[in-house]
Length: 242
Image (cartoon, rainbow, N blue to C red):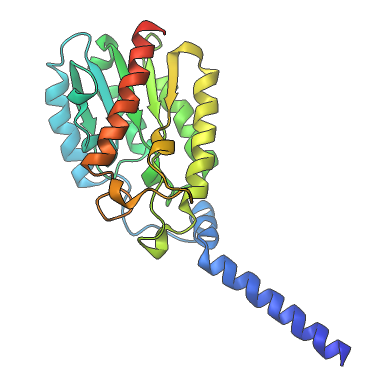
């Protein structure tokens, strides 16, 4: 009888473990990491390539002393002139750290910019683990001209209640942002880290529903206004070293 009970216990334990793995994105991330699972969506898209061509035209006429904003859809949807002027928005929706590394050399305006504001990494989470993303963050900072101050904004937390595929992502985002903050501090005065999440999330750590567009990911106008204020305060410190 005890043997039957013990066998039943082991089976239940294994079933529970399998269920936990299936519910989380652990198996998927391991598959991506070791190449067992391939992405159906390409990382470098036609949209990405076409947008860069437009940005190269803009880049040629960017005035000296302009603040350059680089990143994914979070930056692309941001009114950067509400943060600092003069400024230019080089955000590309769906972009990743790999995409940003590829296009950084194209922006000659970085050599004569006043600063660079970067927000990237949210789209990387489904493609690579945090360790690799953090390595890419370091490479991005090395690719930026040495004299140029960088404001690196944290990956914004998401609302996991919106979709099942978002469940568990905030834990990774928190770990990623902690790593990014450490990398920025190691750069000294060149890099300043800003994290607006404390003012955007609820008690459970989820992005408040009144701050996103309904998809659980992208900030709406109200959410962006909070982010803008956080960026403005940090940029004031970068310029005047308060």
